[in-house]
Length: 268
Length: 268
DNA sequence: CGTAGTGTTGAATTGAATCAAGTGTCGTGG
DNA sequence: CCACGACACTTGATTCAATTCAACACTACG
Image (cartoon, rainbow over all chains, first blue to last red):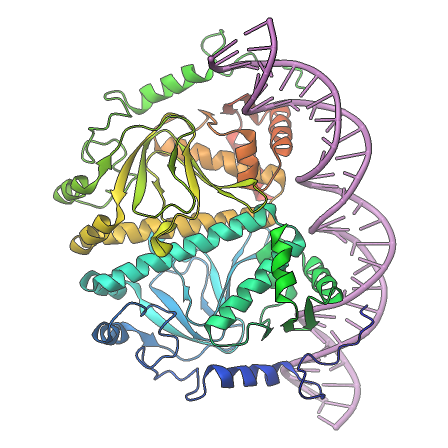
């Protein structure tokens, strides 16, 4: 139990700040103009166009990409984008919200294989086998751009820049997976959590959100399944990092108080 | 210590069978005609053409692919294909022999990120960043086909089948990495080793080699670094599996005696 | 023949899992 | 609006699988 009682991690107002309040203010920073779930936003006007597929494409190329993208209705928290063993037809770009991918083991317990934030691409594991190897679920109200893969292939064939870009995206996914491999095969519980928080922080920063203060949309159990730890260990390490005054934790709200020391955890 | 003394795992001849003897007989099965290290073999005549890049390409497409491939001199055991932080220029297809990829951590200790066998593609992690994130070393005398990536991209743009094929290869790499993620985050030491041996077995089978009897070209330490275990644990688990009569181990030689029970280890 | 690298095995230790009890939070329906 | 139930989370006590430390055996090679 921490002696220093933390009522709220939002310094400004003394009253209790619940999750949705922080989320709302985040969205404001992220997107001062249109609603991020707005399905009519085109790639050209999308604020994520410098993270997502369109990087390195010129205006006219983006317009062509736009034409094959299907902007479906938003997903509610807990809804599935697709399920394990579904036929693969599309890859998806996260427009708003976040997702987790997971597999169900033989014994019925699930293992989380990844989390996805705005601008990131989901579903590339199905390209080779034509079948989704994992299930993917919205962790909050979220919207996506669906990109039918046969059309993406056709268009990539016409636009060398798009082909290059997609090769690069898949390569980056491979690099990310290799980093997780290293993490899981040699890091302690504390190092895993530090690495996880730093990864989230960097990805929030890419979305123009605060890298020091953010919400975890996933449960402790999700984090544990992703990092190869139990939910109890995740909870304990969060508490320990808070006691060391490296982070502040208030349920799903995280504030990184000492980024330097958080990074130092990985350097030993 | 196992009571049943195993002098050799090659049933036929009672004399001691050393590693090179088994390897030699394997190569015979694999490649009854030309030497597998022969740098003049074209894709069209390569016995791996149904595992490697050329799958799904027609004759004339394979000829075009052939033209951009550089068949370098073979590598000796311990030689590097490339090193961490080298500029990325090419991907490589293993023609013979085997490789390991690894990263050096801050503390100087290495972690193995993958093993590669004939027909498999190495180096895709560099495509996005243009820099190799890992080092890759030959585990035995080995030869490779170097595929300069800029030319592969250009050719993929002309040959839709090649583009598709390369997307599929990268996707399969992502799937493989996700499976490792699951293995590392939830399997016991015994399950990890069982999974590792089954993976090797399947890959040897793909190369027309025996799935029941093969050589480990990597050390116990390499295996441990790959599976997130210490070399002592790898050694202990091998001994335990041998005592249960599921496998026979004689230094680097492995024989899977009871494939069914080996698979059953994963099902609990 | 000696040495370096590789592998095996045993004993002690430990980090995280498991088991267990309890609190906090959210959404629903009465 | 409140009470209820379902989840989610925290913390403590105990256990256990794998690591660490240590000693020794095997093999290959100059």
